[in-house]
Image 1 (cartoon, each protein chain N blue to C red):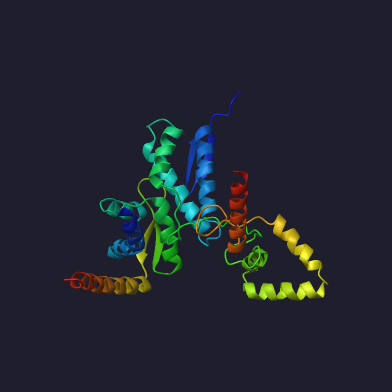
Image 2 (image 1 turned 60 degrees about the horizontal axis):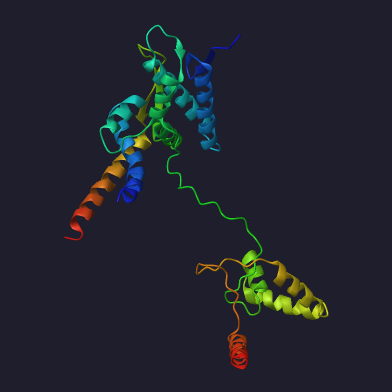
Length: 188
Length: 105
């Protein structure tokens, strides 16, 4: 045995749907209800839409055939279109989850304080002052905490694009280059 | 170009609906037919939420009218506030038109 039709009351009309059409109808109305969630007119608009669907389907029914199938329902739904709230702002891009990161741009050491400042939305100087105060208050233990954070926290992607770049201080770079030059001079 | 025009149309739709409802009491298929001939062609999925908003703002009201075929229909018309709003919008539209045609010539 198979259930072949579902009777649905739509607005002030009553129609018979086959299973597939009924499922399609349910998902359209659920989607509309989601879009209208929070609108004070949700119930009214849904009732209007139900009536519109019923009218559109009736218009498309072949005479003498009492069952709405997807063949009638789909063009009806296409004509009605998805629900659009008036003046709704374009959907905002999903904000990436806020994550504690090191920010090497403008960093003094590695960017840990910079990262904390960005995470909490405060001035980086304030974070640095607090870090120095904590350094003395903790009797130096803060250095270990800082080192741990420096090693563990990921780097924020550079705002100038490209991969995050760990800034190597100019002096160290010069030193490394001169050592390399001397090494290659000595080995050749 | 189209992406710049779409928001303009979207903003003007409410004005056009007020104009259409302003003439006489209409029901939704009337409004859709009037709009369908223009670049403001609109679907029920957009129009019903807009009408509900206008009704909540007390610019339009509706009444049920019996129909020869099928169930009763909602007929919309402007309230006094709606008429005042439409007059103000008409006025503004004319000024805007003048400004646009005068500027840059």
